[in-house]
Length: 172
View 1 (cartoon, helix red, strand yellow):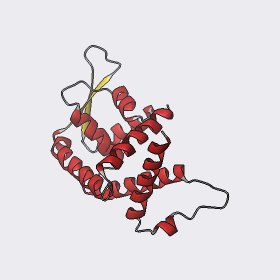
View 2 (cartoon, rainbow, N blue to C red; view 1 turned 90 degrees about the horizontal axis):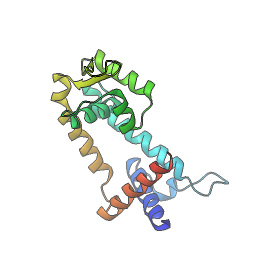
View 3 (cartoon, one colour; view 1 turned 90 degrees about the vertical axis):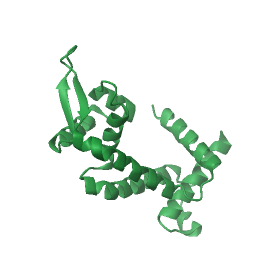
View 4 (cartoon, helix red, strand yellow; view 1 turned 30 degrees about the horizontal axis):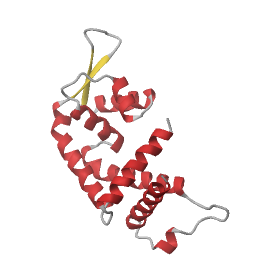
């Protein structure tokens, strides 16, 4: 496990340094009294990736979080999807998903309708507009992922994902 964590942190540091064109000496400066900045590194990476994706997705007038919901709906278009499914699968709160869905409805990217079998729940579907851009969104996300992982070996990437998923599980 310790080896996994070290590979994870090394990969995380590498991605952050490449993204911000930092030298290792500049990046590794740590505030006095702090031995490690792992959590801060994760936060820096999250913010950087979100900013990149929001810039790239601006042409579609959506945020990365909205794109994530569109992607989830696109992947599950053969199934009935309700708000609770989005919350559970994407790890978002009820108010957050409600807000995202309201904005996507205003933009005519999703439509909702009560379920016939239980009218307390709404079925959520993509509109034609969002179906047309779903593949373009995914292509942008895939390209950015490839750019961010340049120089990371497949083994490091695999360990990074494995460790990241473990950390996510530990938060639950």
